[in-house]
Length: 280
Ligand code: C2E
Ligand code: CA
Ligand code: CA
Ligand code: CA
Image (cartoon, rainbow, N blue to C red; front, side, top):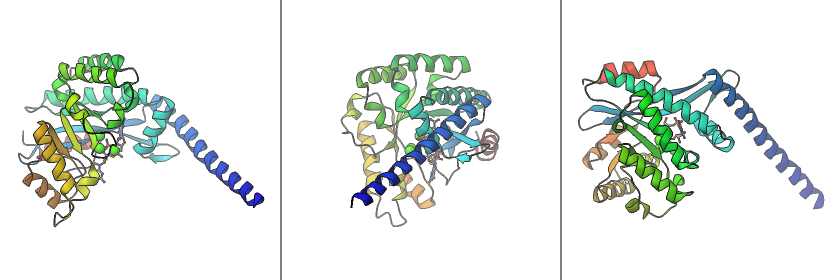
């Protein structure tokens, strides 16, 4: 039995070693990719499906490494959060996306709203993030009204008071605050009354629950009703099927995002999408 236990320990250590090694490889390659400009922002359209207009885009990072190939954002964002690289990634995403959307908005009657994902780590120093956001918006000449930050409930776990202060300051400046992946967090809902929030994004899993006969749609419906009584905006993410769109429209959730409309697109493809789908 002793021997067996010994073997198990060895196997376990090897697993850890493998995972650690992979992370180290990803970290080193990601660092290089950031320096060489190999990390790029893609844009996924957000739609008002009742008016049939494109209201904005969400910035999503993409990285295809020369050796590793395509690395999923879920993977490299989590490595970046552990290693501190998330700060350079954030700068990169902000500068690229803000200047791009500002450029697009020059030629549009109805400006696009840009949403950028903020990791909880971005709020380790809440005061300086606010300052930096204001600087970048002003450098890129993007109006705060055309900018939204997406945070998850995990952002509220640390530094709560200072984070609230920072969010308030951004909201007063004109920036919108959206709670991403709403419904998947573990915190109580009481923060919805005290926090400066403009919008809830219904998590993709609840949209995927909406089947053709609408039998599993209770949670999506409950979240929509919640936003109505709290007077918050609501958007559904991960809309893939026509019947999900119909269900959401029936429940007066007009704002949607998902493969039914478009996948995240590179700059050139998004420009083509705007030309083909946008009559404004
Ligand atoms: P997220 O913020 O929840 O982004 C939505 C994810 O759902 C994106 O995955 C998007 O491509 C995907 N998606 C959109 N529509 C559909 C659909 O109809 N069906 C399905 N199955 N998926 C859909 P992506 O781009 O792989 O990003 C994954 C996560 O990585 C993001 O989740 C976000 O948490 C993180 N991420 C991506 N870019 C950034 C960034 O710039 N900063 C930070 N902090 N996180 C980022
Ligand atoms: Ca998001
Ligand atoms: Ca989400
Ligand atoms: Ca997510």
